[in-house]
Length: 156
Image (cartoon, rainbow, N blue to C red; front, side):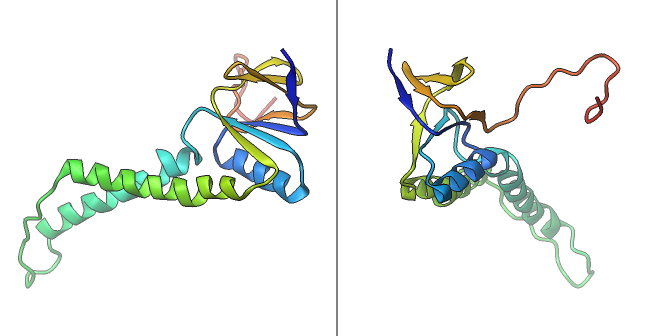
């Protein structure tokens, strides 16, 4: 199997991977970016954005029932869980499109491959039965790190 050659291979589609891809594009580096998950990382997909949206929805349901002032009457807002989730999904989808897919689409030196990248050697990555080779292959996501017994995170 012959390998496609790249100056840089990035495995991941989160914010760290995109930071590397943007810098590679700026430097004119031929780059393969490989990801099998949703683009955008934790904050956009399952962290900050969806959580804050759902918390704001909850506030809009909770607080009208508990006014701070006697002069304000209690309200009974209707809540539609399905609609809240659909709205959250629309926000996440829009951010994925605007901040990640559109950015990738404008890059000339970065080629995106959908699939699970696997190191088969120090300088070779396989994805979807294709082999890529680079002297600079990096995992853009969280790396697993073992911690020895009695060792605290951040200390060696």
